[in-house]
Length: 241
Image 1 (cartoon, rainbow, N blue to C red):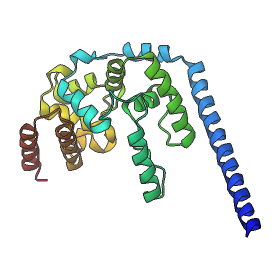
Image 2 (spheres, helix red, strand yellow):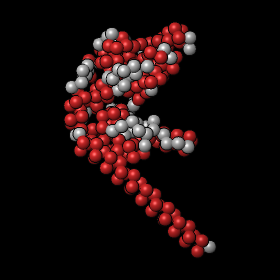
Image 3 (cartoon, rainbow, N blue to C red):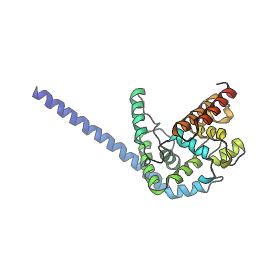
Image 4 (cartoon, one colour):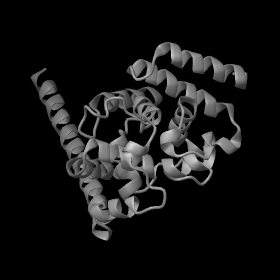
């Protein structure tokens, strides 16, 4: 019996060593990928180029409805975490085991900015690790409001519109600050899947996503429940959904 338990102990130690080796391998590759991207073009230079883009919009010139909707639906603990949300990561881990595929839905706004600003869109584990290193540096160098502002300006809204300034003018012929609740919540839902939700598709999925945004705002305490439910009923009535 003692020999059996010794064998089990050795097996467990061997498995742990393999796990540590594999994790270390991917972490190193992720860090190398991030460093290569930064050596090609520094984080400061990337931010500078973003802010020099046409229709770059300052945070104070963006509708509060849009910002509240964005945070509620994408990253409700945005102002509380340090770039990585452990609660969301836990949810993604559970999803991974249940769905038997890697869950990538745990990305915070900071991580999404890191991906769009520094890396690429490939859903690979090494890129995801590189994204974490980029996120750490972004959170260290910029304030939460700066991160939120940059995210709003780098997001893709479909139909060729990059950034809240272009999307607001392109879809509604309005400055971002002029967006009403209906328009703002509609735009807040588009970057989740722009090729699906873009308004040119005239897709009911777009408005179902808008309803998700509104409900998230109500739950997050940034939208009056009566006002939110009134808009939801209006959307359902107009779209027949």
